[in-house]
Image 1 (spheres, helix red, strand yellow):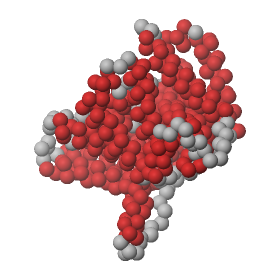
Image 2: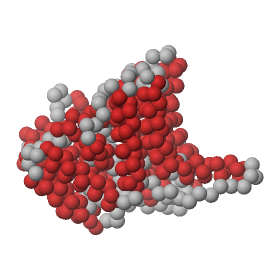
Image 3: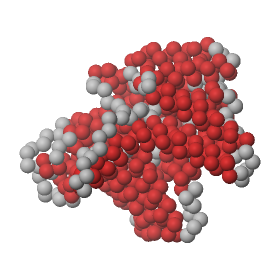
Image 4: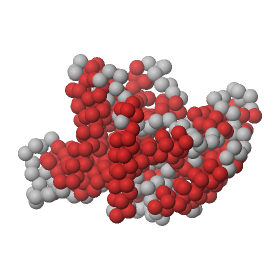
Length: 475
């Protein structure tokens, strides 16, 4: 069930919201409405995997209470934590990486003339990576004493299944939202207005920009690189660079907006990442909930920056290698993670200082270029050879496609709009005290009319065009 599908927009969401308002001041009833709605929402897409989540929720609750009951420093506490974390990672490995591991093992056996292995295809459940990471935060938070175990089964289940953020984040840490889940705040008019406006913005980003750009990127990357030229290669990468931003930030807008309509405040997941002037700054602005999770639950346990420069650099690189693997079970994602980890290390060694000597817009362009090279690897799902060939084509300005490739103008128009958004975000930094929300409030009638018209246009396009899932549903 997609957020902009008629079933969700005209039946599920209104019914749940009206029921939430109808139960009024009864906190327990509000929480029950949200929990049942969230379970129905996920079961609609994953009627089998939902039972696996139920079982792992029960295990989490038991393990957390065992950890909490033991004295700090007792060896059994870490043993229970290890059990809980490994059980969750085991679910992720089974569903997401079994096929990848088997395929590579099969290739190794074939190279050694030792036969091969064959396993049935395992379907990847929607949102499994996000669900697992959030459940791990709960166990680690209890172990660290950051939070107590969930007071009731329904409270923790609501945290896991809360439908606005369930499928593709933001990744919500338990200690960041436990208080809100406990209170289950009533929804007010202001929450609805601000939340629905944010939701509309997300739908516009996804349908009118990301989905159009997806067609352009798919058109290019579906070809063998030998059939492409310099212009086509750059076109595909540019289209994907803006597609992934508007697709994922659009989903985050929808999730944050929906949560706000029910009175919940989720943390931001994007902060104008393409205006970054270093790779370190880019990763502070892009998918911030994942970056924060990696820092708190992987980088710090590895030692962070407390064990010397060499270990710090290795920890950084290893964390982003893991981030790449988290994004998908394929070698191009691993290479993309290693690529970003390398540039974060280079930032610490000299790159950030070198970029700092440039004018901000020059450093921004250089950083944007580095990011685009990374997206080339990320999008080359066919093979690492495809990534290498695309990058080689992008460095050969006089190479033309063997056969003329006509890229429809509307793909370029969508990319131009995306570029205009980024340029505007960079340009307003020179205006002291400028804020987009303040501008929208000063011209509320115009802003709301434009938003509503674009939202209606997005709904029309969404109904007319073929289904295009969110990019991060695959991760």
